Length: 164
Image (cartoon, rainbow, N blue to C red; front, side, top):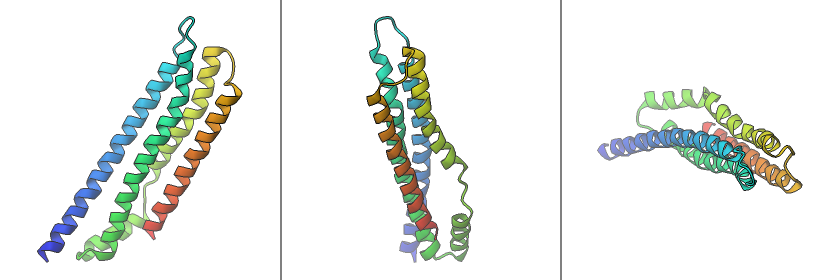
């Protein structure tokens, strides 16, 4: 029984670490995206290359969302394990309740922050260069947007599978 208690305690610690890491990654994402948008919007005479750094903002948001999704899935997987196998009836009941009553505000807020980086790039390029992104820029943004939506939808599907 002591081994089981130690194992359950280990799962609790791993869940807490995953939640803390996910929060840390989201804070870093916000910082990096804002910094890249700021850097790309700097208008320096005879230097147009800084404007191209704007395309990094949605890419960085996507990469942070990949990492955050991984931690989110890990926490949910552990929660499902506890819901099924915890020796404590109270904990199983609590995990079932949590699985049925998720708070999606932070997840949606993080997703929309990432998505807002796309129109921000377009508007800042227009402000800095007095023109919209070139054709290649639109292709890059479209590919990043498709990847971003794929990550979001796939991770949501996986998360819901752990809540059932």
